Amino acid sequence: MKEAIMFGFGKGKAHREIDPQELDAMLRDGSVLLVDVREADEFASGHIPGALNLPLSDFSPRKIPDAQGRTVVLQCAGGKRSGMALERCAQAQASIDTHLAGGIGAWKAAGFPVVQD
Image 1 (cartoon, rainbow, N blue to C red):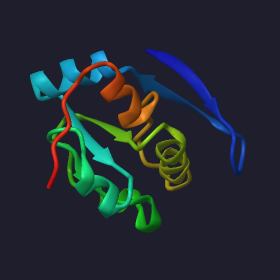
Image 2: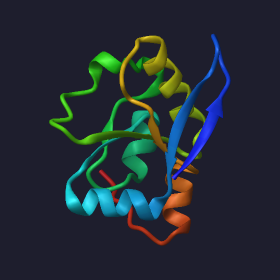
Image 3: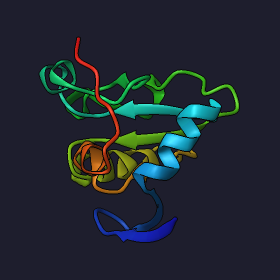
Image 4: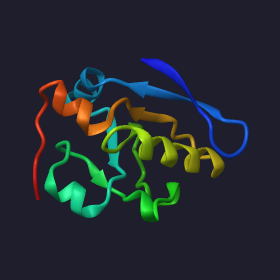
C-alpha cells in the first residue's frame, strides 16, 4: 500500500491506494465493501465481482451503506474519479480514505475477472 497525496479544494489529504492483489485478497476474505463510482452503463458493461455501483455524478458518502466493520474501497476506471469521490468523503468528514490504484483497468491488467449485468 502506498500513500498518495490528492490535491483538490482545501488542503489536500493523504489517501490510501491499494493494488489489485490486495483488493482481491480483501474480497476473498470478506473484509471490503467495494464501491464502483463509474456511471451505470460503464458498471453494467463490466465490473469487479461484488462491487456496489454509486456513480460519481450523484455520489455522496451518505449513500454508502453501513460497511459493517469492513474497509470501504472506492474504484473507477483508472483512479481519477475514485480520487474525486475520496475528496468528497474528506469534505464530508467521512472516514473513507482508500481506493484502488489504477481502477478497473489495473484490475483487468492483473488478470482478475469482471462480470457483466
